[in-house]
Length: 215
Ligand code: AMP
Image (cartoon, rainbow, N blue to C red):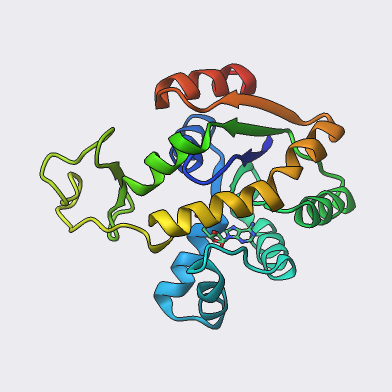
């Protein structure tokens, strides 16, 4: 039973790798960003609060995110292990999460830290397109759909996430450098950190991750 955290700046491919990992290792993929986006779509109070921060590229307040994740992880479908994508994002969240796990007699298996330069990240994020219906993601240059702007899977019109626009991406990269990158040192200190070079292709990165996670 594995409890895995995926760490890395916006646009490094955490979501893509999370999909591959959760399938191969049968881990539940929990993305805090996806949970917030679903709440925004449904117009819930949580969605309304989160949207104000997300649109500006800012982080949603720690307490709110921690409550949400802790609540989600107590559901039965997490019993075989899970993969956290986009959480924790601050040292506060990481410390509170470790304390929460410890109180349950649990601990993380590994923290996979995927890294790439800001130039690469900017290009990847700004070119990213998503299918609002089935969730499949594309990239205008690296993974284009067969027909421009249309999902290969279900034929819906692709969208660009509001927080993938150039201005917001640079803000998110700044927020990552300021608030999330200190987590690398934090997890080094706990002995859980494994570094993964994220500037390569999706299968290459996945191969490295599999080597770290084992069969
Ligand atoms: P993501 O899809 O992981 O890039 O998340 C999109 C946005 O959701 C972020 O830019 C934040 O505004 C918010 N968010 C997601 N996860 C967290 C978190 N752990 N802490 C604070 N804000 C978060």
